[in-house]
Structure formats: C-alpha cells, structure tokens
Length: 625
Image (cartoon, rainbow, N blue to C red; front, side, top):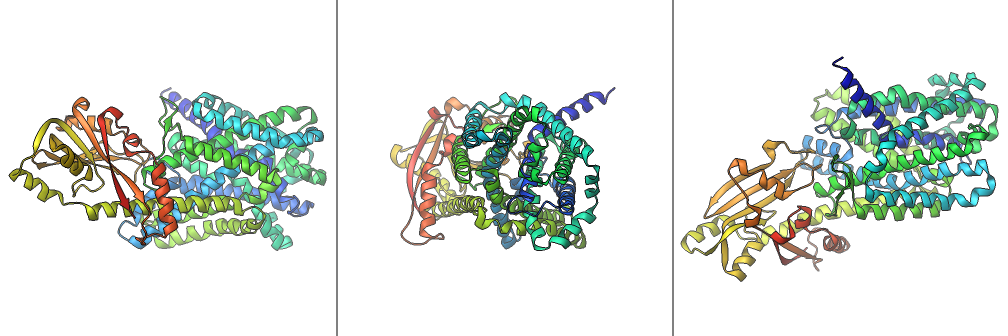
C-alpha cells in the first residue's frame, strides 16, 4: 500500500503531461497526412500511402521515443530541460576553450531564436487546421474560418494575463478525451481496411524512397509535421519529471497517434479523394461539429504550451544576459513556473494574427512550417553530443556513432524543409534571425558597457586606504551600491560622496550573479568579504530559472553574520544612459543604435531585482559604446 500514493502522483503527473507536454504533437494528425498527399505532395496510391505511414510511424519511434525520451532527456540541468538549460550545460563543458564556448553560445542562441519562430507558426496552423473542419461540415462557412481563428487566438492571448492555472485544471482531461477520440476514429478506419497495418514494417518506408526518389525526399518536409512539439518534451521536464512524460507517451499518446494516422491511411486507401482533409473525413458526419469543437480546444491547449514555453525561455534568457530586462508577472501563488511576460505576449499575438491573415489556410502555413522545428532539432542534437562527451564522459566512438544516427535523421528532415523557404519557410527563419540578432546584440552591448565602466572606474583598494587618512562624514544606516565590477568604486558611490559629502556607516558593494544552473544551492546564495573602513563586498547568486529577489536574499544573509534592516538600508544604483558612439568599439553602428534602443526600453535593474521604490536612489550616467 505504501506505493499507492506514489502511483497516484505518477498517474496525476502523467495526465498533466498529456495536457501540457503533448498538446502540440497531439494535434499534428489534423494536418500531417493532408500535407504529405496535398497539392505539393505525392500521389495517394496504395503503395505511397503505406510508405508515408511507415515514415510517420518510424519518425515517431526514432525522433520522439529514442532521441528525445531516451537520449536528450538524460541531459537535465538539475532537473530542468529545454535548449537554454542544455546550452548552459554545454557551456560548462567548454569553459576552458573560449572559441568552442562562443560557438556553442551562438549555436544555442540560434536554436532558442528558432523556437520563437516556431511559437508563431504553431498556434496559427493548429487553430486554423481545427477550424477548417467547418469547410468539411458546411462548405458555405469557409469564409468564416479566418475570422473565427483570429477570434480564438485573440481570446487565448487575452487569457494569458489571468494565468494558466485557471484553465490548467482542464488541460489534462480535455487532451485525454482528445487522444481517446482520435484513437477511436483510427480504430474505425483500420477496421475497414486492416491491410494498412502492413506499414508498421520499415520496408515500406524504404520502398517509398526507392519508388519516388526526389519526391520522397521532399515528402519528408511534410512527414516531419508528425513530430513537431518534441522540444516540449524536454522543455517541460522540470515541471513533470522524466518518468511521467515517458509513461504518458508510451502507454497513451503514442498508441493514440499511431492508431489515428493508420486510420486516416486506411480511409485514403478506400477513398483517395479524402486526402483533401483525411482527419475530418474520418469523423462520422453526425459527430463533425463536436469534433471541430474538441479539436479547437485541443489546439488552444497546444498553443498554450508553446506560449508558456516562450515566457519561460524569455525569463531564462534575461537571467543569462541574452535579453533586456522585462516585467515578469507571476500568475500562481503555488507554482513558480507559471509566469506571464506582457511584452512577449503582445508581440506573439501581433505576429500570429499577421501569419493567419497572410497565409489564410493551414495548407499555406504547412509550406512554412517545419524549417524552424527541424533547425532546433539539429542544434539540440549537437549540444547534447557535446554534453555526452564532456559531462557524461562517453567514449568518442560512442558519441560519433550516436551523432551519425541522429544527425542523419535530423539533417534529412532539415534538408527536406529547405525547399520550403521560398514558399513561406522564410517567415519563421526571418523571425528567428531577428531574435538571434537582438539576443547577440544585447549580450555584446552589455559586455561593451561593462568594459567602458571598468575602464573609467577607480580602483577600490586605494580608495578605502585613503579613507583611513582622510575620513568622510558618516551617517547612520547601510548603503547598498549595485555594481557589475566589485573591484572598482561604483559611480553611484562617487556621485553620492561628491554631491552629498557623506558616507554611510556601512557600505555594501553588491554584485548579482546568475549561475548556469536553474536554481542556486543554499551554499551558493551569497559570499561576502569585509574590506575595512565600513566597506563590505557582497555577491548574491541566483539560478537562471529563479526570480532575482535581492531583498529576500539579503534577509537570508542575516544568520551568516550579515544582518540587514530594510528600514535602515538605502540602495544606490547607477542608471546608465547608453548612446551609440561615432567610432566603432566592437559593434557595427546599426547594432550600437539597436542596443541603445533596447537599453532605453529595458526594465530598470532596481525593478528587476525587486528593490522597494522607497528604499532606492538612482543616479544617472552616460555611457558611450
């Protein structure tokens, strides 16, 4: 009986994973086979149907089951997953090899940037595919597909500010009903044409390539739609854990998907005209409208998972110094991971609506979908191989063999999707490239700002020694000076001394550091050194998955002999106004201007570090880069 509570918890987490983790991949049957045999696909002959089904089935086995669930999910960063967590692990492996480290950073950032491109296409194609069922039920309603889709998407983004916890309770049950429904539809289709099960053999996939050659290669660009959403398996590992995600896949999600794909294939074998929309043609006429409603709910949930992932990745990128600071709103008192980033929410909404209005159908979006997903898949594999070699100490032959197998599949999918660039694939690539430029510009710009501050700063040690010979007027209380360079005098301290002619009894030079782990261990929370003359150097550390709550961390210093009374503490912060210089200092002029714009609109450090407004003083300075 002692195992019963653990089993119930495992089952509950697995049900939650069905709703959150598998929403995206679970709605792929809406459009995958339609794209394989669509206007730009292969003819729907019996041999091609069996071959395409074989490719879909073995893609689910190799990419999802073997690569992500058994290999990639081993690369957990203290229980957290996702490409930013993987990048932090890979960076740790190359800490003493600067060139490799910079290459890994660029690779990881581009993969993260492509995720945002995927985050725009996924809600657009998923909701459009669901609502397009109206064209099957009542062709006269076709003109309402785009307006209804936009209405659903606007409603979804409006709900974000209220938090996913309000609708999260129904995620698992709704998706469970969805998977049971598509499995039942698949069984009905297979029962009418059981020979479709022959496609379980990989021989039909090989025959598909031999028979269609170039066309078969291009068809991979549609087959890959069956495995979109696999990054969510890894990204949500910290929320559910490995076992619930694996349990949900192998016992429930995978069988349901396979049954539905094969049921659609059986229908196409019986009626080739059904390729226009095999998913909805598989649904009994009397059940079309309920199925459209259920599919719309499922695609909303799938979109929610991508949006939540974008919020989480943005916070991690801010913490690691790859994005400007933005307001982050916590929408749940129980779950720290449920957050809302208003600025990202608005930008995603505008871009998704623009994608729906621009492409207007799931067929057109299908031509654009896949390139961002497969690009991220390739990058994830490369970063994981670095971790396997340097963190897990795999022998080189094992790493090379694993890499050869996985990259053959990944690069095959990616290459097949390259032909989509001129047909709309440029859209997610352009979005990803824009995000990549912004992230790298912000990172480089911050390095240049810190360099300028350090070059213009005065050494701290001589200043403290000079105070012993020329003491300043002291006032009661503690002054905390935020500084990026703990070895020099903060400009805010110099301004305070110059204008107010006083120093506090205790002066703390505070540096906030972000670790390459999601959460800091208690032993890493802080480190302080007494410098004499009432000066203390203090370092506070946070994980990249934590909110940097400076007052809370200062309160935790008390038991270690460094007490803080917030009513007697004043925070001094230098607020730099960045201006683009006339001479190149490390970036092109347009990047200098882009960085200055982002810095001007970034959230202030005091607000980001949750420093009370009535306990802070901001002193401005101008920095030219």
